[in-house]
Image (cartoon, rainbow, N blue to C red; front, side, top):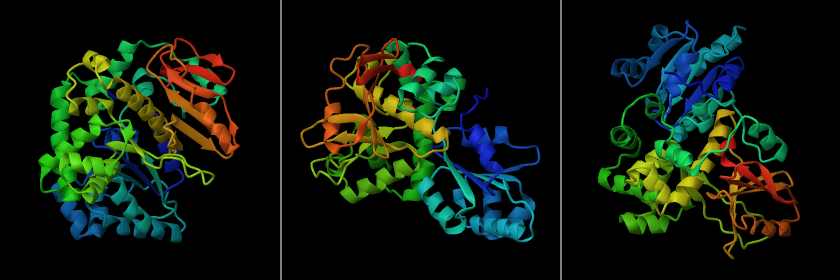
Length: 408
């Protein structure tokens, strides 16, 4: 069963505008499936995981594209980054002869940083780049695509197609995660995520990081999952795992570039030096994080010590997915100062601030207590939003609204 992805419209739109479409993201989130579903009958498909196709691309790129003529969908293209130079030749040759070159190449890959390096060197201005994550709750439940907007008008409109959800429903969704195969099949999560981690370690980590001691990297993965929604402190991780801080930074970069985690940067202003500048880390798939932390059921997770961290991770990842699906880069921050005043999410647009708190209660007590710290920046502050388990979108007071998490 195929679940329609909210990114599809943007992909088809950009196919008419750019010669190259590149979709990157965590393994098994559905990159190839989505593009294969969208492709025209004339578009050839080839994966560079196939050893024969990969050898041909490496040894004779020109013959490779004579064999797999555009329009073509190339899966896991980062395995042979050298083909980008041949793609550039083909695109530019078309342009010079006055022929249309839009939509000639669709590429997928699971290592964004290395991919973007090669794209910027070879195909600058010729490629539209998209990030795809696992299925969002909105995709799973069949809601319409949208880009999360903190304005009251946008939230009121979104609430029209939403309904209240219980704490139990939310944690079942958190525990399940968003990997398409888990959603559409009856494969057990224990089997799926066990195989997934083994595949990820063997293919991505060995290929791109040249890590010798995989058991240390596995411990690192577990540590990161257990610290989702917390500040990213390299020295503490290094001490706990028994590795160097530079190694931690390299491994964090691997997780970020392969779409496993999202690094949320703190917002700071030149007006003050009293703001914390340490980023926070969030797993993009809560099901994977729950498996790594060995939570056996949704109920044990709901009642466990990490329930708040997982709830926050779920909300933040859903908001990030809405940006990705709209073809946008998230403009999200968090706020924390040395007095430990923290705001979970902060969106800053021009001279306007939108503060957002995330609470797992339906009736949170004083959830807006830290919003007032923003007044010192002399910027316009829009009504704060409390994403929680409230039954309705309603004002807490004149400056703050309770917003059901089910709008996401």
